[in-house]
Image (cartoon, rainbow, N blue to C red; front, side, top):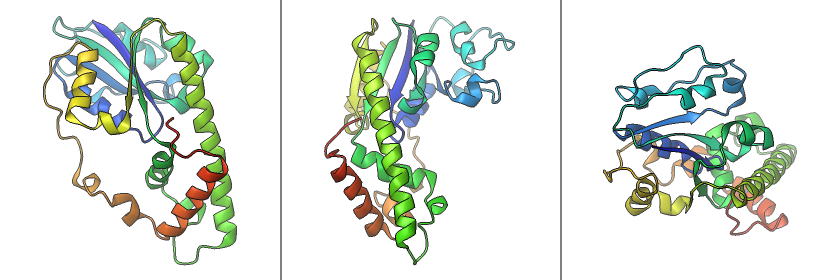
Length: 242
């Protein structure tokens, strides 16, 4: 049985891959087990439908909850057990404690120029005072400073993961976001985990099927995108995959 971890930046389809693998009859896959609130025991972890009928026993008293993954006793047909972690959640202590040197790693990369606007959509821009018709210079400055900070952090964490992979003893599957979201790209993941090739389930809701979802959700879209381009140009990030 293969144990694995999916690692990628925010907004790189790590979540959709988790949902697809969780739906596979021969795989158990969980979400963000390395989130701080889960590790601290402040939030429980829910494997949702991925566990149904796929394991024999689990010790509910194990703390912190992340350790439950390693204590699962899967049924004989289970070929892979894993979870996901975003690059922002990783540090030296967490990788040493929860990512064994021989575990399989699926490393997903995406252009930082695509990650940033997707983060805006996911997190909402109201808290940066950017919605509404009056986009003030002060609001734009607050917004830009925030995203310069998060951009530098994303790059630093991506470099940290790259260093981790250089010294990793387990198998590594390095895949780009654009390739992952194809039929063959998903099948390559199943081959990597030695799982039966079955079609990827339709996990996307209708609201995500529209290619203009980000553009339509952000007022002042053109101004916001101009500011993002200024950030990527200033930091020389064009065509950088993290």
